[in-house]
Length: 417
Image (cartoon, one colour):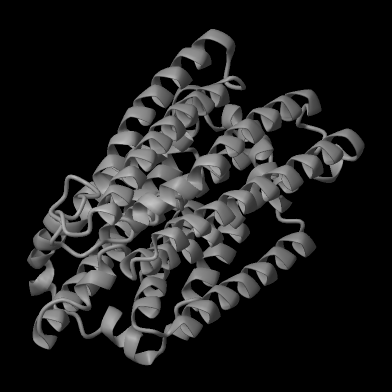
């Protein structure tokens, strides 16, 4: 919101698009490393677990370095100065290392370290925001530097032993072992992340690549109004998914359904509050958020479309999280594959037919398809669970097409939202 007022439209569009790709990369990291981690640290002998952890740490560092050059090249392609692009690339790489560090802290029972990392990151970024405000910075050097410094500092709370393990005590010879992680855990998860990204953010890539960051900027600016919904959705997902998984593991199917209903009601409530606040802002004081260079009618129409998109996500997220807790990853991947195809085609058609504003409606169409598929799969899964409860002596109802002897993975499907 600060940069919305100090950057020109093209620069803001470029920065917003880079943020979209960075958020997507965190979803990729969740699939590649964070989701398999709880399983890998509990399987096999102590020696096998240590070998697999060395593999994950080394692969994590190598791929983060690859991500650095990818972000740098993307920033340069968007017309950002090479120095500013390099600073954002540094942020992108260190943010991914932080994402893995948070997952490792949770898995090893050091949740306070993850919380301290979040707080230090937030305080450092707020200090950078104050510097941007006081200096009247109008380019991307200072904002990108603030992001990178915040990401670097946020690694400190994970502790010296963790930092040594991540940056010093590495064994790159263990990297080939990641093939086993990919085969057993990450492939379906990554498919779901990529196709979910296409469902949720197809417009960002298509509008930016075809019309440029200037056309994307007002769409991204209007999406700021639904940001509270995304924040609450991600937080509740992180809390409710392990709770539902524990309830299902303990045989408390009714408890999991109660958590689902509570989750859904909470999401409907936060959506309604956000919608009321957005309407009040647009009607009474739109220039508090949107500067003069953004047409209010255009922003208001885009915000209304975003509210419809957020409404569909709010209605289906609880069912999606329940399926994740139940290990139904293949069906979730199918749902996102189908909806992503619908989103991409709808966005392209609407972009050329009625312009970039209505490309958001293409996202809405994809979200409707995704929600319908999720609700269908959730209903089928609940019927299977009820059938298994009524016939406990029979075979356990399979929750997915995967090998049921494998431990259940946890996937952070909604980070890219």
